[in-house]
Amino acid sequence: MKKGLILEGGGIRGVFTTGVLDAFMDNSIEFDYVLGVSVGVTNGCNYITKQRGRGYRVLNNFVNDHRYMSLRNYLKTGDYFGWDWIFNDLQLKLDEFDYEKFHKSDVEMIANITNCETGLSEFYKLNSNENFEKIYKASHAIPVITSPVKIMKSFYLDGGISESIPLKRAFYDNCDKVLVISTKVENYSCKPIKSHFLRMYYRKYPKIYDALINRHTRYMEEREYLKTKVDEGLAFAIYPKKSTHFVSRVENDLKKINKLYEIGYREGLKQIDKINLFFSSD
Image (cartoon, rainbow, N blue to C red; front, side, top):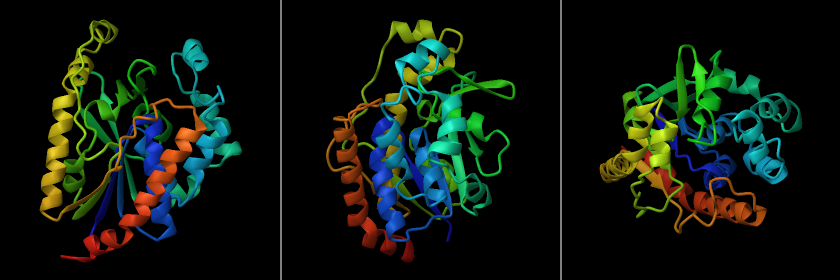
């Protein structure tokens, strides 16, 4: 059986997922395939290398470091994230990411990114990919506060613009059963957005604007599809029991961040027996 894992995005709210995955690592919950959206890519990479606690540690040590993410970075480079510092200092020196273990892993790590010209998702395997850094950056390229990332001849943004819960892709990639970790409550309702600013800002990429203003419809369809697959016994979903919106997408309050991590960790622990049963049953 090919066991899949999908990790939704949500900016700093992804620390809920960080907690869930640390609980999984403490209980030897394994997958063959991981598909990350936005910050879900970061969580997935740390999970594949089994660097338990790294995601939590990085936020606690660097979330208020302007080199990591800040308005200063945005004004200087057009990106809220300090990518040169992240890849050259954070990942290699300050809190090393285990690149060797990641690229040798048998677990597929897939990143979802949005093509600016088409407004559609594209999926790339990150393991042993020569464009790892560019795809990683594109997967975190939040609209407006980060610049599109050029990969070969096209430009890309955050995959959550086009597909936030790409469950259909996991089944397309031959997963038999899939566990989805959402950063939103089960009864969450995505609201439409209308913005003349966004229309002007993305006038060069009208498909991105279209994807953004129609995202609420697509997102609710993805949630309904997930519910259908849960009812069929092919998917298992973990949601926070209460809204995570007390943490903003770019939160820097460590008390709030740590609280949401603990909520995620406890929720992960609660689900261990159910997850084992889910993957062991026909």
